[in-house]
Image 1 (cartoon, one colour):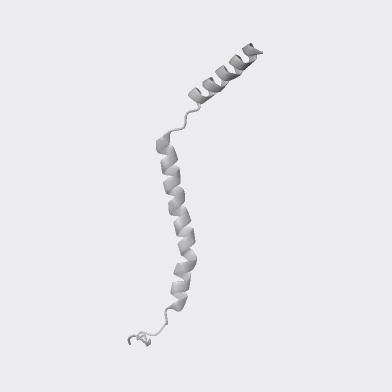
Image 2 (cartoon, helix red, strand yellow):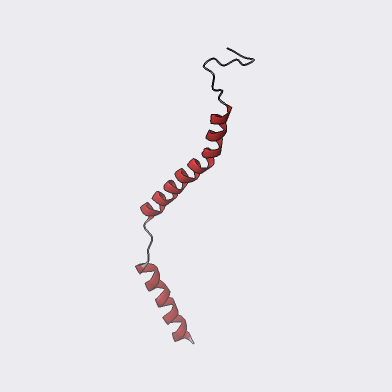
Length: 65
């Protein structure tokens, strides 16, 4: 029983040593994903802003002309 536990522990350690993740790659993936998510989230806002702009050259609002 103890031999089986040692073998499985050795296999786990071997796996962890051979499959280490590079932290730089992980940070790049998070940064890239954040940028993409921000663009996707901002797209409807930009479209609504585009729809709200009148086609006339002079804007007449309650604040200014």
